[in-house]
Length: 160
Picture 1: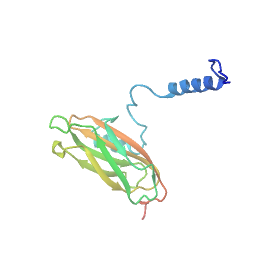
Picture 2: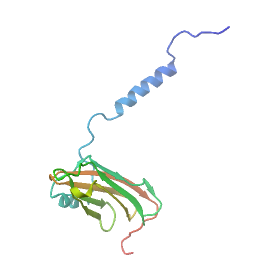
Picture 3: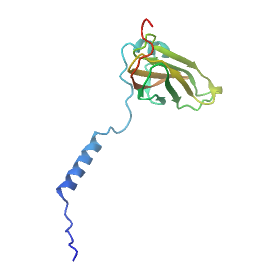
Picture 4: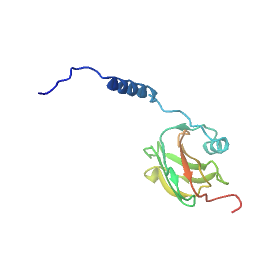
């Protein structure tokens, strides 16, 4: 004989449903933040690189490992959403670091003949820090992305 349970909602199912609904409310909806919380040290450098324009979040994808065993050679990729036509293209990509002795890591100049707005390189990092990539477009707008990298063995330390 098979026992058929009546269609009732158990406390466990009710609790899981309520917690799931609460979790959905905590997920931010709509547009992403317009700016990142930048380290104070980088703000004047970024304003100088963009010609005084405060960059907005979006259009830039910064890919770094979240954990780097050594700061001597950390892979980095920056990709910018752009058609790369004479009318709309990326002029420059700047990469900044929060704690390196020299915070300007790299500057790349691009144009419509680059084909796509993407750079791959390896960088040195002086410990765990925030890395910021800023793209300046030909229309004067600036876009940015930021990533936190945990470095177990620092590379570029002051005085080395």
